[in-house]
Image (tube, rainbow, N blue to C red):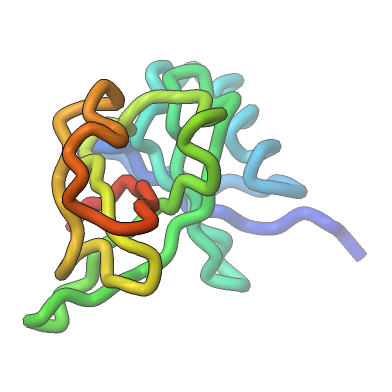
Length: 137
């Protein structure tokens, strides 16, 4: 029995979609690099069997984070990538994503604040117990 899974990889601009077989999301990213893809920031991976989603948060694909789906007031789905520890985060704002801050227990889409960059982390004081994420519709 093979331990390889099937992943769909989509470019940040939505123009390219590739199906890959790999043992993990990290191995799928390595396959993308080996196939000649560059600038992986914003590429998303979806495990076809489980539905789990991931996003590359840097150009070389060395850092990937899980994605979750959040619906806005109109039930439109947004992809949200939570940043567990903003102080130790390694990467960049993925291509095609916005960067936001929201309070623990609140919805990042409905109750969050959009930030222009990492230099705004902790400076606005608009949320209590702030959490950070990347998001896109």
